[in-house]
Length: 225
Image (cartoon, rainbow, N blue to C red; front, side, top):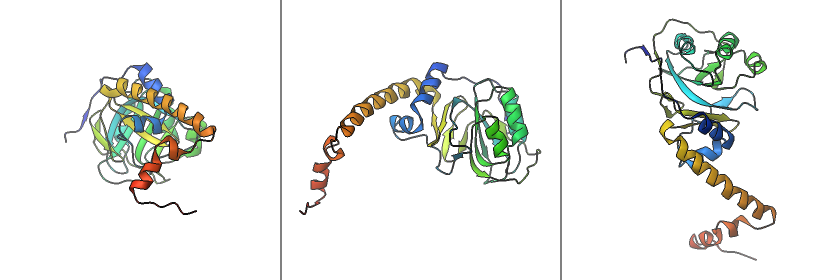
């Protein structure tokens, strides 16, 4: 891969991004056919962290944050930095100073398949971060990589401009071209869940609501009084 920085990318409609964020990771993941979910080791650095924005991707060398600095130069307000490394890394590639820079440029959050540091300070900035690890290990700024080219982050393919949704359940990626249809499917799922919730609160069993008695019978499960 030739090192490159792509300055201009297409983004989804902000209203669609906002609605996907409101729906949340679990709903969006189910609504788009259980695809796009980053691996579960990607955890928020504070429990109330939430984000919804367009992906600005960065591919870095392990333990090197040069391309994160480069990515901040091309972000738009509301974007989410999504960072992968060319080989496995858990070093603290992002900390308070980069967080201050991101906030100054309107970055909505960070998803990084590596480590971060200064988590208390980042939380105080209300800057949401999902990372593979937390480590005080410092990093270099010397390895060329890419910005705004396709990457794989924590097992999920991410194209520049894809929608990134993050909350306490993890992170999910919605392809930019699918944003409208995934919003529609998410809305339908939430409406269905609302009806099911009321039935469960009224005392109906999931066995009956979901037709699971037939499944038990088909699997040869016997009721013993």
